[in-house]
Image (cartoon, rainbow, N blue to C red; front, side, top):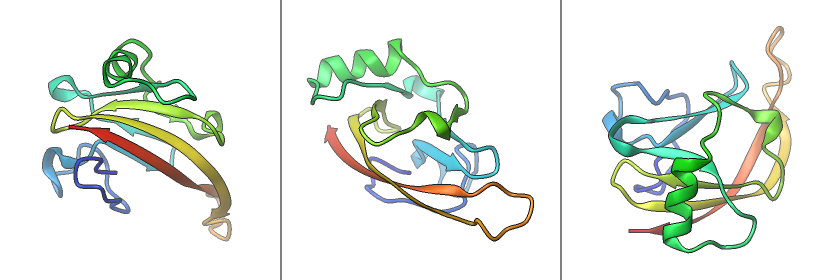
Length: 123
């Protein structure tokens, strides 16, 4: 996901050269986790369920980082995250729905839930 560009790119890893430094975090079905970039001060951490201030969210992105990767099983409806993006913006992300799994028909690969999120971005 590129929070600055406000778009989702399927099948890309944070280290891929396809988009350079624009990818802020990914959800990989293979390892069932969220992975995020940590270069140039970027970060992703758990945030408050209520809307934080920009400063609070920036602090939480640094002080309460997610695991690398964060197990997708820990991401539930209502989970909130704070991010420092590749363009140094601050984002508050709230999971609004964990939908039906996709990829359930792929033998040997666990089904991956569909995540819906709301994002507030401070530039």
